[in-house]
Image (cartoon, rainbow, N blue to C red; front, side, top):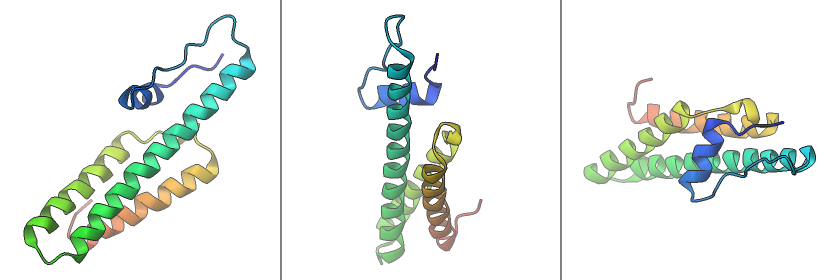
Length: 118
């Protein structure tokens, strides 16, 4: 029977959603459908976080205000570090992994343009 990973449970709790309980009366098909939905939610959350990070980096690259540039650069780096630290691609489809990795590479590239070292 499929079991939720720690990351999936944390993601759900982060957004105020109670993780589903897979009970003895639940069919394997229902459990697989729930796990599939959780995986899609995980991918959506990662993409949303990365798009936010790209928005921060774009603002930092385009502004002439040093304070705004520094704050948005720092926020973009926090997003990159956070996503990289909790990245669990094992439960995602190949297409989702490709999309997420593309966003991560774009964010890293923009951060490097601002002088961030990896």
